[in-house]
Length: 158
Ligand SMILES: Cc1cc2nc3c(=O)[nH]c(=O)nc-3n(C[C@H](O)[C@H](O)[C@H](O)COP(=O)(O)O)c2cc1C
Image 1 (cartoon, rainbow, N blue to C red):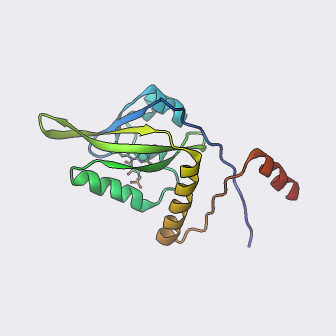
Image 2 (tube, rainbow, N blue to C red; image 1 turned 90 degrees about the horizontal axis):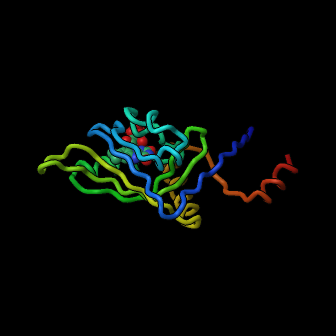
Image 3 (cartoon, rainbow, N blue to C red; image 1 turned 180 degrees about the vertical axis):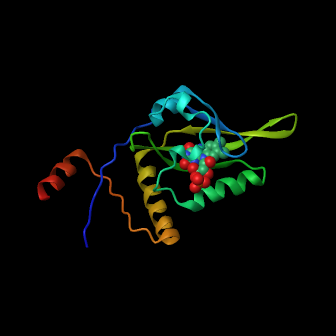
């Protein structure tokens, strides 16, 4: 079996910043703040009008998004960990809160606010989502976190 590996660069979400977006009821982005644009590597204008899955990362299990939409459909808000893909194919992890926006009691949009997570949680969630994906999709993709030093050693072996 041939094994290949790709390297992706992580963008760290700084403390005290908020990544904010809103979508219409179908998940099309209607608002993105500058921080969201900066962290995802897009311009605000490139995000507006696009489906929110523009930042979907292939490491995310399908069931997580099914859970988000099912929860929103019940009129509840959803919280959880999300790995997102940047325009340059790098990634960033967040803890996201997704909920409805109401006007005069009517649901008009959805909004999401995200905050940074620590590295330990990130690695735990990567493992959790790898296992979930494996059970959902028979995926054989494996993700390893390496330091720059470990990477140098791996490169020597190749
Ligand atoms: C307000 C809001 C924010 C969302 N934020 C993200 C996000 O940051 N990343 C993501 O992959 N999906 C996000 N989603 C879910 C997407 O709409 C979509 O369901 C998901 O990317 C999976 O894509 P798919 O349904 O085409 O498989 C968000 C949805 C809503 C309503």
